[in-house]
Amino acid sequence: MTSANDLAALAIDIAREAGDLARVRRGEGVAIAATKSALADIVTDADREVEALIRARLSNERPEDGFLGEETGAERGSSDITWVVDPIDGTVNYAYGIPAYAVSIAAVTGEPTPEEWHAVAGAVYNPPLGEMFHAAEGEGAWLGDARLAVNTDPMTAGALLATGFGYDPATHAGDLERVARVMPLARDLRRAGAASLDFAYVAAGRLDGYFERGLQPWDHAAGALLVTEAGGRVGGAGPDGRVSNALSVASAPEVFDRLLAAALGA
Ligand code: IPD
Image 1: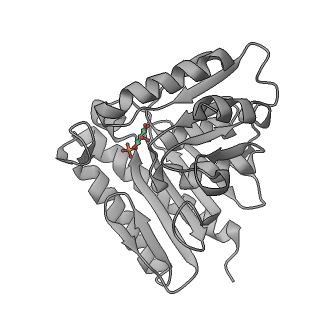
Image 2: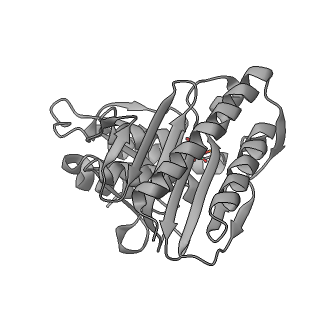
């Protein structure tokens, strides 16, 4: 049986190679290949090339595992493991040249849906900064060789929070109402543009909490494990309070219940 550490090591290795390719392609110039759910929801040639690299490496090294990727969709495997992949999370940052984008790779077991899966390993790699966040179940969350812990005293001056807004303009009014409900808890609010890094920053204590509606499975699969392995809490509007497309929340334990209640409007 493969250990969570072995899966994390593979996620790290592939994320580094994939991220380095994304960084090289960024230096050569970015071509928008298509739009997806909305005009603002773009895919670049690099998203596709980087996902192809990740998928090829996984199918070479773990041919029995399943795959769920942002650009190329889902394929069931014969093992219990599925790799959940966002080749370039923060594509709009990437296209604009803002150095806040990441390769996100997670290994999950069970049904490959966020309502049911169990995350066992993950890596979130920000190529411009060379920061490799990674976690294996029960083995902690790490930035390179440094163990991560969520901020345990975030509320003295209010919590430093982050959020995001979906690509569909029709959802923005509701998202802004959520921001208004949450702001009484906050000392300030960030919108950096890459969900996987928002989760990673909560794990690293660079943020006290993060909330967003509209996340896709590949946006949170690796990041959520980073947060729980760093001692934080993750949840949302899904079954049994799990992360879901309707709402995802990650934070230090001290903030979580208040943040979730405010974000839900409960
Ligand atoms: C997006 C980013 C963004 C978040 C969106 C995501 P993508 O992912 O994570 O921060 O607000 O909800 O879709 O499209 O750049 O991979």
